Image (cartoon, rainbow, N blue to C red):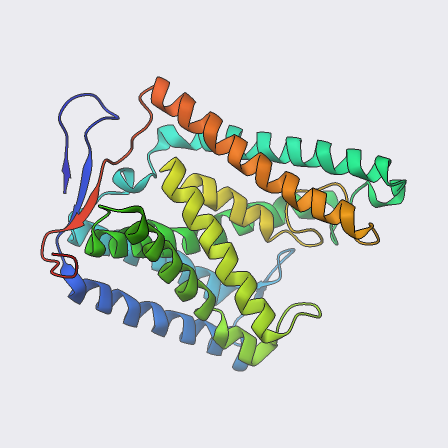
Length: 300
């Protein structure tokens, strides 16, 4: 339930109405969904693969159905998509912010490649042709990133913060951290059946997933725009480079790799600062002014 005073983007408070019971119900259904998807795609190998993206058609349809489930849970708790940062008016600002970030990241990275005389590292590094890369990105955007971000940030993180109440930054940070851990744990069944990607150990992969979840959750909190982590998530899943990058740091000296990582963080912080100033000036922010659960006793 949202409470408005005046203006489209001011004085909004999200109130969940289901308490811990609905959270527990959601987690059980989500766990069953993950288990079923793993069995169908990785153990039983049931169903055809979707051309180009090579994803199981049944589990892809299952993911789309889960979006409907999340929508139903939110509506049952008195919360609409627009209240959690999924208003259509937020899509273009998120696209501009993320695209601008990658332009800056690529400019800095290519500059470092020239500075370290690693010109061979500049270019197209994805493992599929450009046309297939576009299809892969759109698939990741709709069938993977949107589903996962809606699940873990849109509902779970917002719900957990609501149960804790967002009266302090520590409680918000706890909500982000807990959701990041849940995001990583959801990948355990796939690790058990398919192993970790590349040369990563299972533990390193889980740590990487947790950190990614925390980054996505933080971006969501500071922009109050779910499209932002969705777009970064989809870009991060691209085949070949961890993002829409036209350079590869493999073979770079350690100092250059470190500088590139720091530059990435600086770009993200700058993007957030610019976005928040723009959002405040255009009354796009705040999307919400607080979150709570009407039946919660966790933080009372």
